[in-house]
Image (cartoon, rainbow, N blue to C red; front, side, top):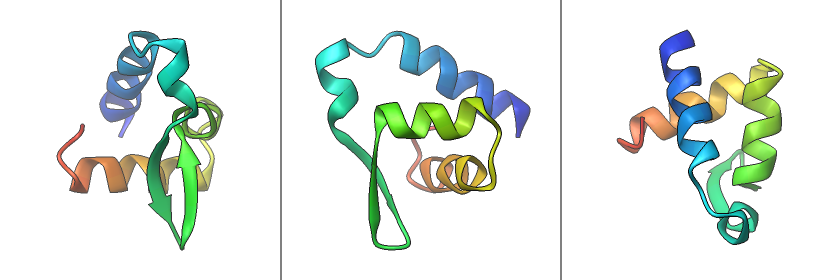
Length: 61
């Protein structure tokens, strides 16, 4: 999971600021932007782990 987390953080760093407010993923019928995903993943929360799994399932990580 750590390597997926690191990969997301590297990708986030290269995303233009304007795109960071775009919806990245929907979990439990709630949309999450790049910024909210970053906060959850960076803080290693349970939601952050769900986001990583979802991104992995979509083939983004």
